[in-house]
Length: 219
Image 1 (cartoon, rainbow, N blue to C red):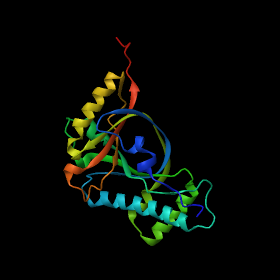
Image 2 (cartoon, rainbow, N blue to C red):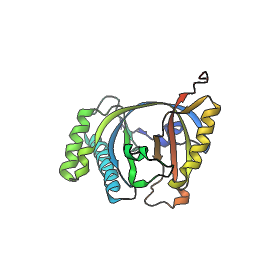
Image 3 (cartoon, rainbow, N blue to C red):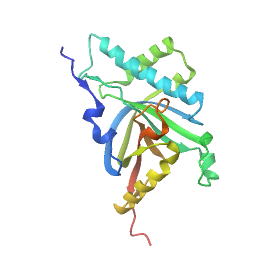
Image 4 (tube, rainbow, N blue to C red):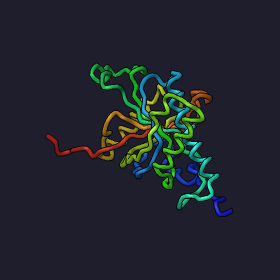
């Protein structure tokens, strides 16, 4: 029973993953993730394949570790972290941007956070295992990387993804009042509900963007 403890992000990391429906300032430390980059409409079959590749890898890592005799230092079982993603539009779309987002021009980097005791070597082993068991073309795009988001503003968004702008306006006003501004139009989404099964009105998504200090001295 030495390893009966379990790290549950919903209980232990509420400040990072379960913000309220009002903006908050937060510094996100450096974490490691399995990630996959892609582009195009999130309603497409290809987008679902990207998600499937990540989850296949995440669960292979978790389940294989549980069965190992020699466990890594500081090992503790954990609840698989939620799906997250950075979103932007393509460079071409930025050249002619009118304010309306065409979903076919979206670019994304989806990710699932990994505990600190996972190494890149172990990830590579597990990825090979997934490729052999459940071959998928997009598995070649799955990477293991460290991401440092730093100072951010985040807020819980309820409802349709198409209405995120309303939440971003609240967050941007909050930033300005704190002497901060949004670093870029890139933003992070953390999916607290399964958008394939949950009614749009009940979707819960954490929205987050990186901030920089406003230069108030500029003439």
